[in-house]
Image 1 (cartoon, rainbow, N blue to C red):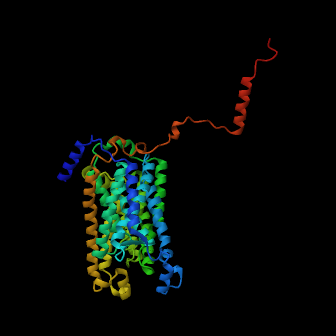
Image 2 (image 1 turned 90 degrees about the horizontal axis):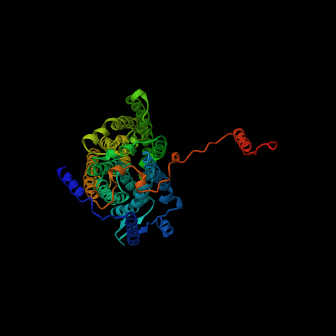
Image 3 (image 1 turned 135 degrees about the vertical axis):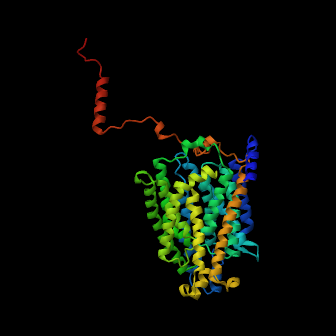
Length: 490
């Protein structure tokens, strides 16, 4: 922490530099780079290439319906809506930062998915015969997953950073994500269908670590803008409902065909339902006069979907999913009431959206649940073939035992934490450099810093509207007042 503070002080002493990276230049340069890299590396895979007809004959495939597109595309649609609508509108709760919440979400997601196709492609889809990355519908889903980690990190920094800083955060976040995902899924051989570890734990601690590095001691200068208003909370709840409805697709999108995907949907569905009831109960119990807090309803109701992600395709059992949802509803709601204020006051972590309560703690819980569930797996419950298919006990891992798999799951959680915290501190140090044009303390949480904002409706003089009979009366009175003096008057 001492080294980090020294770096902060050094950056503060150089705040007067005139060197700044502008948003148009960054967008144009990076999009040009994407075009060049895509031209060099990215190609269609065998299921999206015109040679699919020949591939069908070679593999004795009888129908186009066996193309993975028809199986994966419905899930891709749901995940895509979650990324752009769900996450975007969830961040519109601030009274004067709705444009930034949904607009910058749009920006970094569109940039991030391009970079993710490249980074994940080099690790997972590289064809060594020609050195090209072959992409299909599953690559698009995985790219959205990759972007989700950066959007979670954005939630911790909402309103406090510039769009250029967000682009840098995404560039490094996608890179770190691709590396930790490869280590966890391929080298350690952990299973994480819904990304409790790979997406949520990494993304949340990545954002929280950056927030700690970018700590603003004078953020109270913008305190008047940190709250919500009635309509902004309604818009944010739209994001909540989209996320809540489509989360079963998120957790099951890339699972194996058949029972694994079916089981993942059921487990997520039940965990989410349980979390809603628990969140409402806890919110009412701990708020004054037994009233509900919309912050809890917007966020904690989703925590069950996060926590069940790793074990979504395991034999968690329906009652187990309800237990996970119940526990997360309690922990996440209490996190907003007690832990978030503690983190800001004593740990210097200013977490705008409360990602620690929605993603970090439930993500860790999900990793632990996954490790326990994997270690407790048995052939009597799964069957031999079911055990092999669920945990991918093939090739180099053919002789792996479930208890060993449980240890590998725990190892995957540790890697996600290390990459999230360590990577966040490094990227946070880079973002402290005074070249990114971050907003001043008294300009945070305000769209006017980066957006053309229309005038408030309240500032426009109101025009009285009358009913028909009143309008007619008004016209009659006007006509009378305009009538000249009586003609009989001399």
